Length: 106
Image 1: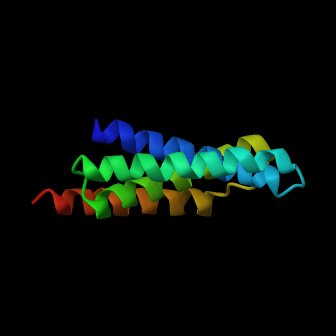
Image 2: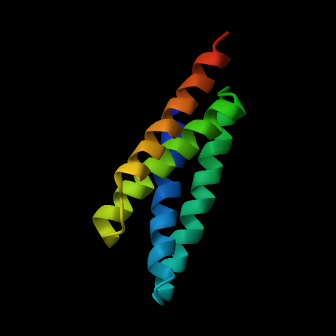
């Protein structure tokens, strides 16, 4: 169940961040999903930690997947740039998190 909580934390954090982008464009109604999304995201992250995922692993995965999903979604939804260099950065972040995960397995 811990991985489900972590997945929900990631999805809701990304949704809240994308909602923040909408709110920043003068659409005040988007502040409600921002607040709710971040509240749910941190609650789910807390539950994932309480189920036994180490904080370094959970936060690393949350950050890496969150960065990747936010970059791709902002490209699709807002036509923001997603260059090859940015893509390489995402790959390196994910590789670093995988190394942390593998190192924590010992």
